[in-house]
Length: 602
Image 1 (cartoon, rainbow, N blue to C red):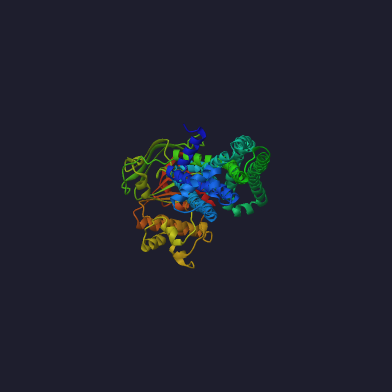
Image 2: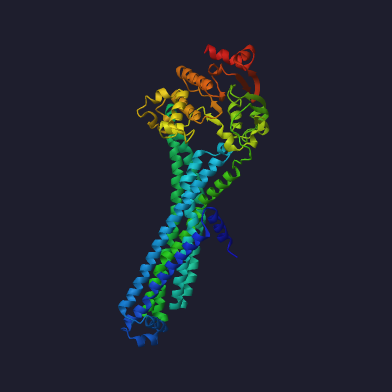
């Protein structure tokens, strides 16, 4: 039976990417390093004896049974023992030791980097594959810290026990040699070392708690940083720059405090071992001289090995402390992977859909956010006909964006049925369902890259002709041709050098190049001035005329959707009214007529 702590480490190591083969290779290399080091040092005993007896083989054999085996070995290779040859053999062992140490170090780094890459890939993949509810609940900064910082710490923590095993093997090898040299002093040494190893135990326990606090401090700092770095204008214009700086300084101070505390605990552990081992060596020297009457070469070799034990014993304790120190990082990686696995977006569909033939229907649909005590959508029943433009309007918080999230199954209704052409969308595969839907959000998300790259984000294999057509239809072609490098112009993150209208039309081109049967536009004119809004309306009209596209548009500005075939008014999560622009205006007490009047007067 394996000890529980070893079983826990094995399970964690395997879950985080180590394999039995890798563990075996590292232990085998460690064992080889240990054996070559032990033999390299151990051969100093016959060397010292050879020097003391001037190379007299008969005297050496009569004094030490070790020399009987040495002579047999030399005779096997048909060579005579000599001082130079003994030195060369010793040096050869150390060379082999360094060679295998080099292989082990390089292999460790390769394994560590591979596991780090695998964990980063796995964390990112599971985040992308998680459902929208999970994305709603996890701050981006938290995940950034996990991927960039905690992964490295977790890998170091999971690799540390193997270094611990290597140190233990060296310790056992050295103790075996010391036992052969003087079993009395070795037993005493073991007792003292066991006692000494208990002294830093309190610091090792504190390391685990400090490590968890450091992980939490890293998370808080990353969450703060990601949010503020995206909003420097808001910070300065709100006059909160000083407060934000002070808050960031507090967070970095917390990081520094726990990092320093962790280093202090490790330093205490390292420092306390030195005087113990050195003192032990001096005690041995005293008793060897006064009581044990050992030969000078035995005393010398014993002291050499005892001093070599110093970094080994320190290594064992500090590696164990390292395991405790990075336990928090290992735990957060495990928790993140487990929670994302539980939130995996399952594809229950088996049918494939290629186009919309008749209609999209919402039948008595409810939706409830986990963080809310009331339903966001309540009994929604509407029908959106194919190749028509349907507008969703209503006050903020009425559920418009939530409703369109149900169509590509970003969210699943808590009640009711959403269907396309009479078939529940849950019966369609996610891939085919989302392939027939193009989406342009209220705030375009533009990554750093060229204009062409952004448009191609909608369809990776689009031809240049398709890119140009999408730019023309969206109304983006004109301003793109005025850019320094036209379609090859680098936009920068969020395309900050483009106006709001230009970003909106560029993102519309990205949606259009997909040539999807259904186009969803989430408040596309909310950030546009009057001229840009007019240009966008013209672009929308061109799309509607030239393409057999079902357009679903969410809007606050009613003038931008007055030409829609059908307008659905949502209010407090319910359908208040539905009809054409003129039909809705006839109901003067309705939300639409009142909102139209207010916006027209404005």
